[in-house]
Image 1 (cartoon, rainbow, N blue to C red):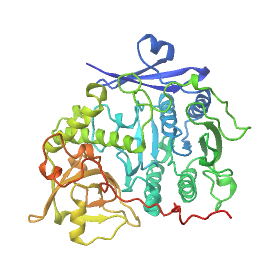
Image 2 (cartoon, helix red, strand yellow):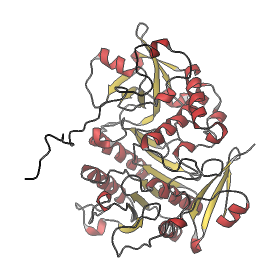
Image 3 (cartoon, helix red, strand yellow):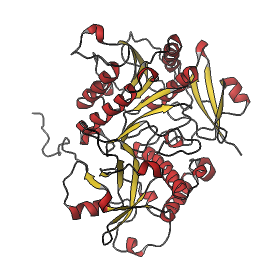
Image 4 (tube, one colour):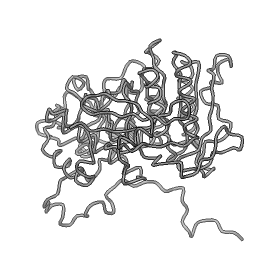
Length: 480
């Protein structure tokens, strides 16, 4: 039986349009919110502020057939990804194709965490990220694999900013290489908009601006002014070239979800009350109904992305790609994690010889013995050989090391990447990504885990995070 999902997109005349996708058939239709309710669908409403920004994107898509770029910037938790998804759907409706440049390695839209990527979309993005993972193989209901991806190996660019920028610029180059056929580009920026994070975003967007004549910046502001992008930021502009060579840049200031006001009294926006929103920060779940959990933490969102990745991994290993879609409504979240964890333990891994690959440990120096210990059970990036003159290499996907046979020199890897793409992999990149503990084992008796061990996620179960910027109470300066 076909299932359906809905996702809002803005059309002209103040109407809120709905995409409906029927899984299995691959078709979708567009209708108004009133018609959607009459058919029993739950529409995702957007504010008038957001709808105005989406209307600008639609006008840009219909005014000319040339490629343009629309970047969605702002601090964490303001709805950048949600609004960017709606914008991509608007462009898809007008042009049939849209580029998606994902610069958020912590909570990417289309890939597993720890990556930056460029994907060419030809079908709308329906629902939150875990419902449309593009993992490197073809699955029913999933977008095409990224055109280009780079492995950051962390949920933040802070660990290695140079590698992050190099990977992002490689994605931009892949878009530019499409030439006259390159589609309009939606840029989902990182939420790190202060200090070095802002400089990284500016450098990447300048590279985008050098390859298009028209750029749009939708700056989504938090109600906490100190979190927002600083004033006088010239997105897409390169100070090293003549002003006439820079693209035309139009900036729109909009409010974050749930009625928070934008910065600046003269911003082209309108404050909207909470009553005009309906689940704006989290799209409708894949049954056409609202998600029960309206606000998830970043780690919870990443866990769901890993759950979707694991479902695709099991489907690929068992040669049943039609089972790769994630439908939480069928099982429930806890049941889905438990069932998928069990399936991972029975999935057939790929066997790779030590002699055929190189291990690259990111952000750390380890000897051979320590590297093997760290590799066992870890998330790794599957990389091709780096192109001449490139610091980073293309990533075809990620995998989880199921086990290591030291005597026979084999590594066993679980991954949803197709066998054709795995033939080009020459390097395993080990970063600091953590696989969710809920997917590491299924329910049952594990004496060696229960005697003299910490249950679940107790103290010492995760990597230590630096808190050097926080002073102890007895060392903090006091007023006299």
